[in-house]
Length: 93
Image (cartoon, rainbow, N blue to C red; front, side):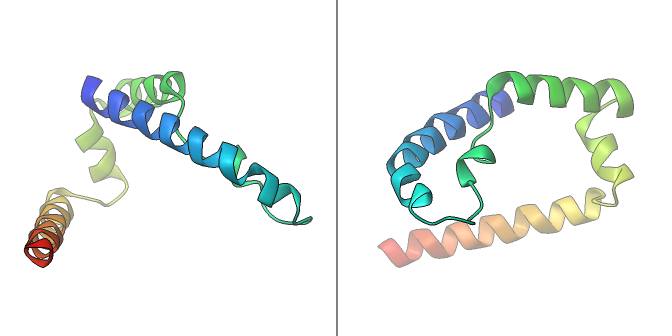
């Protein structure tokens, strides 16, 4: 759980930096969605979200099962990600 929260916190820092750079661009285009409002993952929000999931469903895996992303789907997802990572590594050699 701690690792998930820390990784999301790193994404928040990255998105904040990117959002600062693109703010002027977004302001120049009226009627566009403000991506900054939806970017990143504040640490406290992730802590609360994971706490809610664990208190409501018992675990992250139980929640994933509940929404239909069961063990077999998770296994397929991990295999697909691993395969894509291997292809990426080979392409850089």
